Length: 326
Image 1 (cartoon, rainbow, N blue to C red):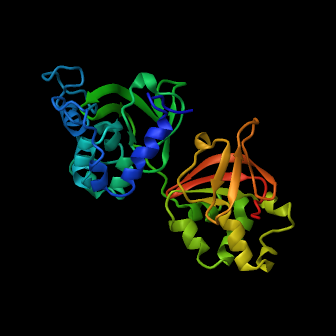
Image 2: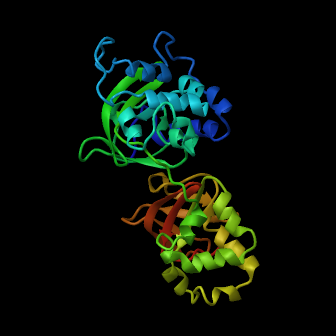
Image 3: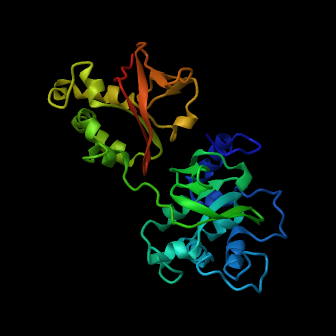
């Protein structure tokens, strides 16, 4: 599941995202030299949509709420306007009515906490027309992914796409009817949470035993965690009560063997072959069966039983066996 482009979507995103995560100024260096200069940029097109040009008639009366002044103002308040003007992007822009439902307008949008991360959650790299959208997860420049659904009309997460293919010099805009909110809880928050972490009490206890590991799970950016369940630990005779008997140095080695630090690998990104884990060991991914599974250095395998649990700093895949490094 992906978005189709002339090159594989994931390849395009990985190339562009490497610029985004460094800084906004780095993003501005990725402008395509082939973009036509006589067509308006994304912010300029958003501004024109606010003048009643949605139907192609500059003198047309504005449709109530179907303007994009708040989103355009947000780009200015966040300092992202030049980024949106210089890089080739696909923008899912909430209309003014969507922001109004949250009590937001051009006058107060700058007060929204986490505005930059929210805006980056509405944009993906490259130009993707509505006809090229297919169902599945798509990473945004925020790092977290949005889900495209076509079953009940085109949707992004829970938001309907209400305007398509407004072309700009440096990309394309699709209008949506709700503001998309990125994940705000980090990986450790999710493991600590009574609901999302209910199946990870042994893992959580083990993390707390190892000095500094809790902070790593909470603050390290763009990680993929293969998280063993309580039942997975029980298979090797461990639980939240007795795991404290394991040497913390050994626990560190084992737990970091469950973390990939090279980016967020969503289930769609997993392909057959090795990946190097934070501990330094190798994990083999196998997608050939109906269930994706991973094989550790001792030949033990673990199934991915739940995938794509998104955090603000990474993604979690729930697995049914503990992985043991060599």
